[in-house]
Image 1 (tube, helix red, strand yellow):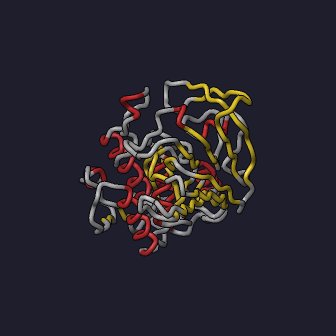
Image 2 (cartoon, rainbow, N blue to C red):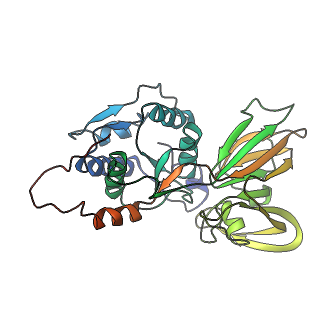
Length: 332
């Protein structure tokens, strides 16, 4: 529920994603899933009441998770974990890179449709929410094959070894990039000072993106389908790269060197500094601390909605010789 609302709205031209828009997106997902025969739709409750408002006056097989709400990323992590335990067939995440990261933290291999409503939307995609619900129901019900229509995303595994650490978790993950930033506090989480960035490890490096991963994207592009990651160390006088770290802003950064990180290979960085994952600062590293980053190819299974809709069309899923109000299917 906090996706698309952070401090970057005050410091850049980043757009605001309203709760009303998110209500509309959730509602469209539910309608698409219900009309395609979903027998069970599990929703994570939220402090803003987005899910409750989206489901008002909808006749659908709804079930709300009962976990206590904290208003933090733990809500999304626990929701994903609970959905795994409930044998949910497909998870639809509505947010940005951080939301998708939280889902992966709760369910590392979640069958995932990621819809972009966040600030940084490198990992999620912009597709119609009704189509997303349609595909989710068809895959969950067994009418479309998950393996054929999805691929495992890359995952950046983090391990912090710090005898003077801040008490944060030793292990974590990112789906787009990990960065080490100069500083000694997390603050508002968003990375807004370009001169503070020391190093970036990007599993997805697209030159058209906005955010930390764009640094790697404009030096050594790497698609989400290609293995490995790109490591960019900043500083020195080897050259400069112009990037857009926040919407509507441009920065010129000095580059020290660029290198490749192969699948299952680890790179280590020394503190002090602040560790940022998928665009958000989340923990500090002391001068005794070490950050280990390894790129793997066993992240969430990301579903290709466009390809799935094409397969559904080819199989005649949208045409019937009889009139019916709901396309019921097996499964959940």
